[in-house]
Image (cartoon, rainbow, N blue to C red; front, side, top):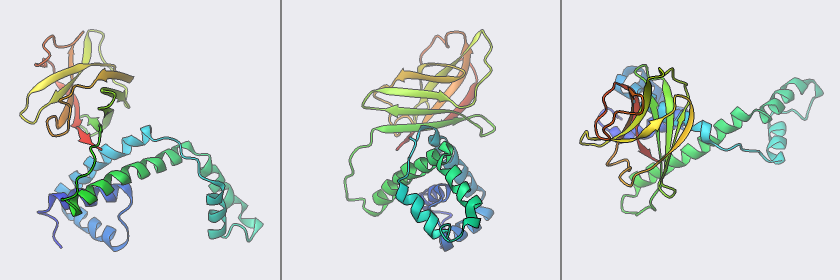
Length: 241
């Protein structure tokens, strides 16, 4: 099967590959395509930049004690006390917040992929509207700088800077929504570190506003809510989840 001219299939497989749900022969075939296709490599990098930072927002998952008993039995840790070091490893993993936060991210984002698969296989089915959005903004070196989430119910944007920025005292960072026609509207100023909450306009859907960008402006912003004056320092796609 050739997926070169099937962008929807490329997106689906790339998402499952990044999540780790693409396994066995399907994963090996995808990796063969990936080694030969520069565009497919870019699709994978885009999914990595979109999904991996979402682990920061995943809630801590505390597994039930039955999970550890099942692991102990499956790994043969009940059979010999000489395996205490291996058991200690799993106990340490139990206490590792980053591991379970990442696991929670996989569960959450796997649901996103499942919805996309259902929409692909059952186009006649009307699915309930999803009210949440996310964007990972990266610099020109593809380094994630900020993660932005949107909640249409609360009409809020939460901008979290994951890589602190050095901004001169006479400069400000300003967030812009970019429409599919290329028109821009200011969403407000953002800090060079930490998080900030901004109002979410009603036009902020992924179809009408596919891109978000941050520019470096004079202190206080550009002065024109529809015209940035400084360079774009990081940007990313606005996606519905």
